[in-house]
Amino acid sequence: MGAYDRYEITRKKADSVNKFFLHFIVFLCINTFLLILNLAVNPSFLWIIFPIAFWGIGLIVHGFLLIRPTAFPVIEMEDEFSNKKTKIVKKKKSVKSSKKTTKKKKQLPAKN
Image (cartoon, rainbow, N blue to C red):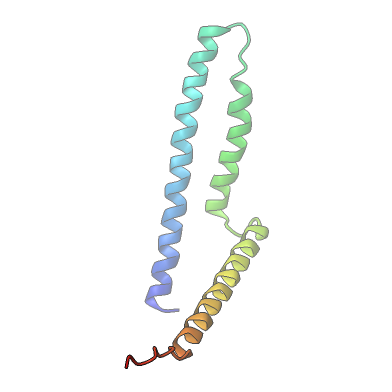
């Protein structure tokens, strides 16, 4: 494993952590707004517990995936599939570009 590979792995992990914290900040902001809205409109029934609970489950799963990325192997298989698909597309593009360079240009007839 080269230095570039280690850099890419570290960059992907840092991106994942940044996305998690962004998810957490959005969770806090929106649910704070919803709590204020709930208390202003109907304080007798706290419906805010439902969005907090269900969104919280998603946030917990997101955090769990940061700690144990192999917990859900389906996600890894999707990544491998998308990488293979990208490689196939790159190969097709390189084949097309090589065909374009091998074609002979038509010569225009000479003017008399």
